[in-house]
Image 1 (cartoon, rainbow, N blue to C red):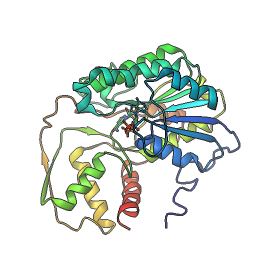
Image 2 (image 1 turned 135 degrees about the horizontal axis):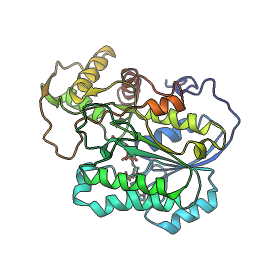
Image 3 (image 1 turned 30 degrees about the vertical axis):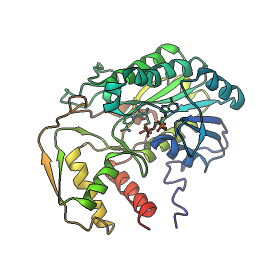
Length: 316
Ligand SMILES: NC(=O)c1ccc[n+]([C@@H]2O[C@H](COP(=O)([O-])OP(=O)(O)OC[C@H]3O[C@@H](n4cnc5c(N)ncnc54)[C@H](OP(=O)(O)O)[C@@H]3O)[C@@H](O)[C@H]2O)c1
């Protein structure tokens, strides 16, 4: 049924060189790590995916156990490490700041000590969200949450380490699995007559498929690419929208695909009650677009792709 879904063109691999084979380890089997591992199966790279000690689907590796990471690195001799693991629960980070700091900063310090090229993910939460214009990589960071502060400390540790790295700073990540806004709205559309969604949080929803294809495009470059282009890159789908506009878009696509039968009314609420989420976290992606022309995809197209996958996964 899903055969042919992950073809090279859809992954953004068409036209890229093949035959440049790497040993890669992916840390974290959450939204991004799982999609990337799935997509790498279609390449000839050798990939190992590690989940947390709680994982039921991957090999387990507690990133807080530094000697366990060393053993994995010795055994697998990765040429690239992709770190998709993080403490991502924004609310819980407020009450468990040390746990967030350990995972989002201390782990990065350790990973970068190996000197192995590292692809890492940062977040729009490193910005305050008070700017009227999209943020550039050179703009001042000013996180307003524990999550944002710990992620920023991780970014700074990585930059200081001197290890070759590409740090993809992204926003509003969603995919066919996991805890994300798209799946939350789909579930509310099935059960509620009316839902209220804020209009004052604006950013770019970014699909795990897009992040995965950006990583694949990086892996397909010459060996020296990561070292030569080390740094932070804003990496988001193209097209800013508010949470309210995104919910409306999800409903429209779901209807077009023959789902969302209930006529749920989506009402825009002026102001988010959250004081720990940046309001304007639009990221300017020009730097990545010039590094990897054509790597970024329209946000609405990606929403369609992922909603289609969700319906194939859960409704067939
Ligand atoms: N989600 C977003 O909206 C968003 C937005 C911007 C940037 N990002 C960044 O994008 C990256 C990927 O995010 P995501 O949405 O894929 O996150 P996710 O779904 O929450 O996955 C994170 C993974 O890290 C694992 N992990 C946490 N602590 C660990 C530990 N001590 N040892 C081993 N594994 C551990 C988690 O395992 P358990 O689930 O078992 O704890 C989970 O598998 C992260 O760096 C995140 O900060 C995400």
